[in-house]
Image (cartoon, rainbow, N blue to C red; front, side, top):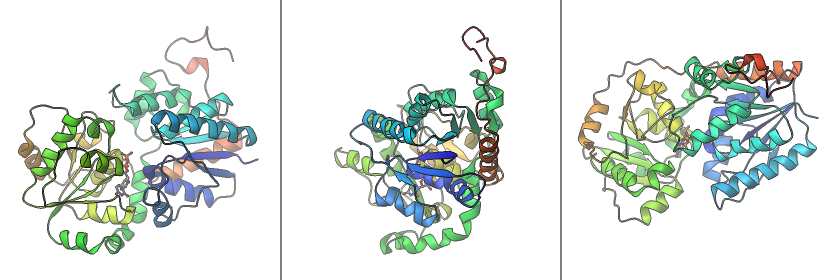
Amino acid sequence: MKDLAIVLGIRPDVIRASKILKLLNNQNEIEFDFIWSGQHYSENMKDTFFQQLNVPIPNFEFTVDTKSDATIVSSTITNLFNHFEKHKYKAVVFLGDTNTVMGSIAAAQHNIPIVHIEGCMRSYDWRMPEEKYRTVIDHLSDRIYAYLNSYRQQGLNEGISKNIIKVTGNPIVDIINENTKHFDSGLNYLDNEVQNIIENDYVLVTSHRRENILDIESFTNIISLLNSINDENVVFPMGYKTQEILENSDLKLNDNIKVIDPIGYLEFMYLLKNSNFVATDSGTVVEEACIMGIPSIQMRYSTERPEVYDVKASIKFDPTNKNIDFNKILNDVKSLEKNWENPFGDGNSSKIIVEDLIELCNSNDFKKHKPSDYSFDISNSFKE
Ligand code: UDP
C-alpha cells in the first residue's frame, strides 16, 4: 500500500506543485500516488503543463461532471471516496482553494489525515467561494503548509493548532527559479501574429474570476480599463468562460487588444517577463509578476495576497467600484519603482514540504491535534 496521495486538478496546481511532484518522484523513502481530479481536462489547461514542466503524469485520472460547481465537487468526493476504499494512504495532500480541495471531504469520511498546501491564506472576503473552501479545508487538516508567517498567524487566530502549521515559503518561487532559463524558449510557441505584436511595447492581461466576469458591471469596468490602454498593444490570453461571456455581451475590446486562447507556461512566462506590466485577477500571476519584477494591476476587490501591495509591486483596481479613474490606475502602475523585494520566499519551499511529508509518513505522526493546542477550550468536546 502506498504511503501518500497528492490530489490536484487545475492548471496552476500542476505549475505550483511541479517541483514537489518531481522531488517525490526522485526519492525512494516513501511511495506516493499522484491523482488528477479531472477539474481541468483540456490539452491546453493540463497536458501542456505536464510536458513543459516535465511533471510525472498522474497514476490515477478521474473525470468529473463539469455541469456546475456542485457536480464537480460531488463527483470528486465520490471518485475519491471510492478510491480511498481500496487505497489506504497514510495521508492525502491537497493544494489551494478549488473545487478539487473539497474532495478532502472524502478523506475526512475515511478518517485519512489531510494535508493542505497553501494553508491559512485569507482574503477576509466571505463572498468568495474560494475563501469558504480554504477555511473548510484548513479546519479539516492534520498538517498545513502555510507559505508565510503572516498566513500562519491567520490560522492561529482561527484556533488552528500551532503544532500542525509549518511555514514553508511559496513554491511558485521555486518554479520560477528552476524554469527561468527556459522562459526565452517560450517565444517559439507563440504564433507569428503575437510575435509581431510583442516586438513593440505591450501589456499582458488575464481575467477569469467569476466575481469579475459573471458580474456585468465589474466585467464592463475591466473592459473599460483595458480600452483605456491606448498607447501600446495588449495581449490577452483569455480563458474559455471569459471568451463566452464576452461574445454574449455587447462589450467590445479595442483593436490594439489581441485576444488569444490560453497558452502554455513557457510562452506565458515569456510574455510576462517582457511586458511593461500585467493586469490580472489571477492569484498566481500576481505572485509571478511580483517575483519577476513586473508591475501589476490586481483587478480584484479583495485579495489573499496583500504582500504585493505591501512591497509596492501592484496597484489595486476594484472592478466593483462605481467611480473609477481608469487613467489614474494606468498612470499609477507605470510609476511603480521596480526595486521591491520578493516577499514570497527563497525558493526552498518544495524541498521543505517534501522533507516534512517523508518525515511524517515515516513516523506515522500526521495526527498532531491535541486539545491543549487550541487557543479556545474544546476540552468538553474532544476526547483523546
Ligand atoms: N498561465 C499560463 N497560460 C495562460 C494563463 C496563465 O500558463 O494562458 C499560468 C500562469 O503563469 C500561472 C497560472 O497559469 O502560473 C495561473 O492560472 P490561473 O490564473 O488560472 O489560476 P489562479 O492562480 O487564479 O488560481
